[in-house]
Amino acid sequence: MSVPRKPSFDPVDPLGLDDLLEPEDLAVRDTVRDWAADRVLPYVAEWYERGELPEIRELARELGAIGALGMSLDGYGCAGASAVQYGLACLELEAADSGIRSLVSVQGSLAMYALHRFGSEEQKETWLPRMAAGEVIGCFGLTEPDHGSDPASMRTYAKRDGADWVLNGRKMWITNGSVAGVAVVWAQTDEGIRGFAVPTDTAGFSAPEIKHKWSLRASVTSELVLDDVRLPADAVLPEVMGLKGPLSCLSHARYGIVWGSMGAARSSFEAALDYARTREQFGRPIGGFQLTQAKLADMAVELHKGILLAHHLGRRMDAGRLRPEQISFGKLNNVREAIEICRTARTILGANGISLEYPVMRHATNLESVLTYEGTVEMHQLVLGKALTGLDAFR
Image (cartoon, rainbow, N blue to C red):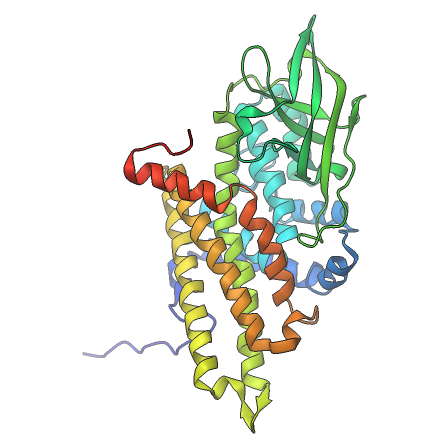
């Protein structure tokens, strides 16, 4: 009886995780990876240094053309991809830069997801095909200047005035805000929290861009200002009321972060591995020293454990069995480990680790934002704590 030949060890895929993927999964991954290599990687260090994303509208159309916007949604021009395929896309996008993955996540998992799940048929037909094509960029207005982790205390208010709604308030740290054509805005009403599809050319709406960021610099981040914004009755999302609406959108976006953070970690690990093979000190490559090998081994273990976790959660989502607490598990672990991988990679690169010639410090600073948005470490710890004990520490 012949013994199957064992494959050679691959330092980039030491556990052979590609074996878990179907041909369609690999095709999606490779399409997004190739696009990022061509359209992002040659320019992103300059964008980051300048603190802008100058080609965002063109990039959005290109992302639409490869099916990356709202890709896990069905119909209305969306790709209808699996959760695993969407996750792989997020990983490849964030391996290029967290700002690019944030553009796609906010577009698809927040703005488009909200319209797709809670919008009227008219709202879906009006916005989703153009958003899937990248012709219209969307944003998602939930966080406020004084209310981040406690969205139930939001002050933005929508009041009925005859058949219309009139919105007043402010939202903060809104990705895509200054370039969006539609904003999904959540507001208090006399009936409870409601969502609204707000065309950004509506009188009273403005979105000044937030400058002076040291993280997510290759990304558009804005404040939303709503000053007597008058909307027709059909602007409200009819299929949801209360916090379950925005929180379900956030769960979908957090799932993408579970994968995406591993992309930033992979990029940093590969940069450190390549550097360790070629950088010489004391007459030989630093990768030949025990301390460096220990760092690389620990980084590889945490990186591929994180990818395994993401894949497991993706399969559960595709089976309709993924719980929000499990997404918190993934977000908490993977972003925290991704930051540690970046920091360790920086030590291997030494002084070169702080240079934009290498991606490591850019990923590390970006991940400081990823650690906070879509739920801070503390919030996800408490979500898991409540699930484990049955006791609520939030109130």
